[in-house]
Amino acid sequence: MAELELALAALGFGVGWKTRRREAAWLLAVILSFSLGYAIFYGKLRYRIPILPIVLAFAGLGAATLLVWLNRAGLLNPRKAAKAPSQR
Image 1: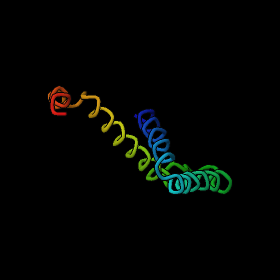
Image 2 (image 1 turned 180 degrees about the vertical axis):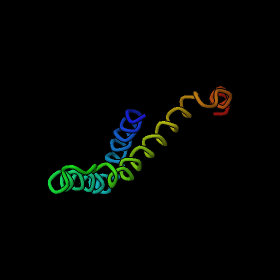
Image 3 (image 1 turned 45 degrees about the vertical axis):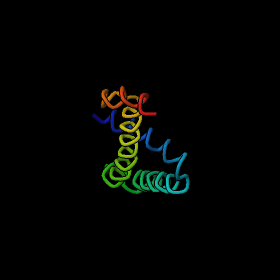
Image 4 (image 1 turned 90 degrees about the vertical axis):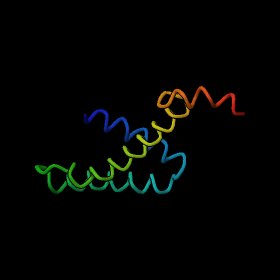
């Protein structure tokens, strides 16, 4: 499950970088600063807990983008995709 979460987060970061570069860079900087800070000062603690909500935000953006792409391709609702060319 973690692999899917990270793949969606990577997709979400890519989409965020194209659409809202400043916000995506800020969130990435928060993730990297928490990771670095916890690695330096709290080497024995897990730094995943404070950065997980931000990673999940990127994963949510990736999942929403994936759903939009699948809907446009007609894979989620085939009847809608079949009607679309005739309605133009």
